[in-house]
Image 1 (spheres, rainbow, N blue to C red):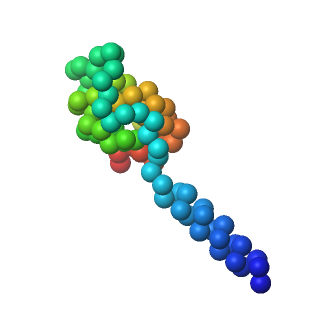
Image 2: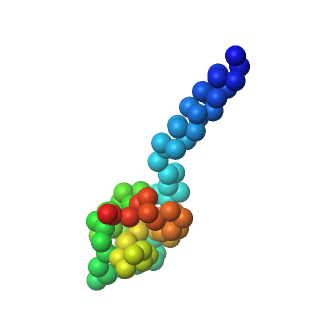
Image 3: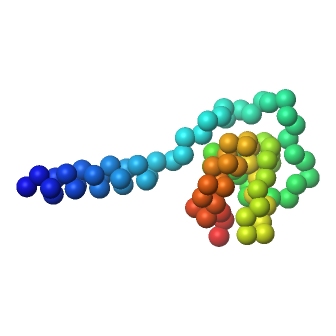
Length: 90
């Protein structure tokens, strides 16, 4: 009797943990001393991790399947590189 209850609880926890958005470890206002990158063509209008507009805060880029993706910070680039397929534009 306990097995179905435990199995249901574990599956619920698993589903809830997969549905979470990534925790972004930077401020939404990126006022750093490092200048934004200029004249860089990227395929995304917003950072795929934190959804900031890349045109305003382009700090870093990464190549994936011959496309250049822009990011507001190295943290967001590193998160993208962990699982690019889940964030890349189709």
